[in-house]
Structure formats: structure tokens, C-alpha cells
Length: 170
Image (cartoon, rainbow, N blue to C red):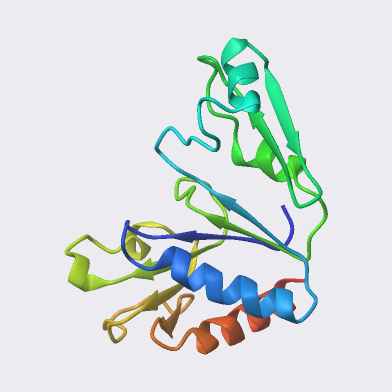
């Protein structure tokens, strides 16, 4: 999976806010950016009384909702296991970069969004795939040299790191 970065962290840490900034700036440059957002919840994408939901509930394996503005495909798993991230990435169109919110268990490069004030433990000490941490705290002593420590309150620095990171691995 080329040019893919997982953005991980605890709920409320600011992952979506950071991703929104990064996607807006990158798309503003003309880059095509795909995003996969993982959720642990049952996601409802349409009201139950709408035709597409009614057809899905009736038993359709997949329902495509198409309009002049967007296309969505809903696929019912009906008890099957959650597909792996690689399968989701394969379903996406071509992109210059794919950003993934979540999937912290995947052995892929990761950017952790870490706020100590949440009272949750940092993930980077135990995950060798974390290549950068965006935090509102200063870097700790003994930080692995392979981890870039970025200022979460200065998202432009995270964008600059991202530019540099993908130039280096391309």
C-alpha cells in the first residue's frame, strides 16, 4: 500500500481535526487524497425510511446510492468478519495519498495524535510502526530517534513533515 499513512490516537485527541486540515491543504494543491475512517460503531448513512435503506434492509448485499453530487456504496456484512484494510484500500480510486483514521493494529506507518491531558497512555512506546507523534506536549526524554515529534497546535508543521516523509519514501 503505497503512500498510505494511518492516523491513530484516542477518541477526543484531535485526529479528525488534524486530518481535515491536512486534506484541505493537500487537496488545495491539486493532490488527490483518499481517506478511510474506521468506526467501532454501527454507522447509519441514511434514514431507515429512505429507499436505499429499505432495499438494504430487504436483503440486498450492496446498495449503490448515486446522484449528480456523490456516490455511496453500502455493503452489508451480515455476520461476516470485517474486511481487512487492504481490501478497503483496493476499492478506492487512485490517489496521491491515502490517509487512514484508525486501524492502529495494522503494521503500517502511523502518525499518533497524542494529548496527555486525556489521561490515556501514549501508543508510540509500544508500536514500532509509529513514525511521528503530533502532540500538545513537549517531547519526552528518551524518545526513539526514529520518531518525529510534531506540534499538534501548529498543524502546518505536521503538513511539512508529511510532505517530507512522503518525499523520502517515494
